[in-house]
Image (tube, rainbow, N blue to C red):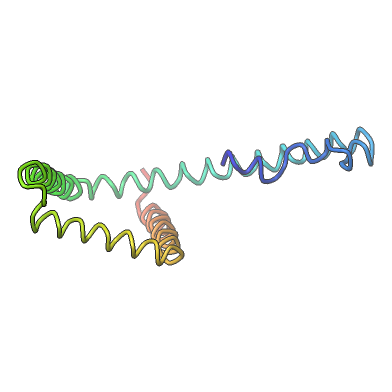
Length: 146
């Protein structure tokens, strides 16, 4: 959001060819006021949309949190075991062994895939985010008012 101010150029009416010098003081002030109103509408729209999505997401996340916590715990234990093995084997024999080679191979394969398919990965992320928003709004509409 912070970048949008640099894209739209808040000082567009202040340069040599802008509204102040070409069309006078009133037009320049109006251009800055319209810019301010436009940016305010964008910020208000984003705030309201995020607040609505946050409420729906919170309800959905609370139901799924039990499974997420268990999965996160399992992944944390596996990651800790891998890191312990990685450093132990690197210190003792310097090779890392098959486990480290497999982990490094997966990491390299994933990095190569993301690098080769950047556009698809970004669009996939956008689709997942949009699907989550649709699901959240759908779930919010189905809930009875309290």
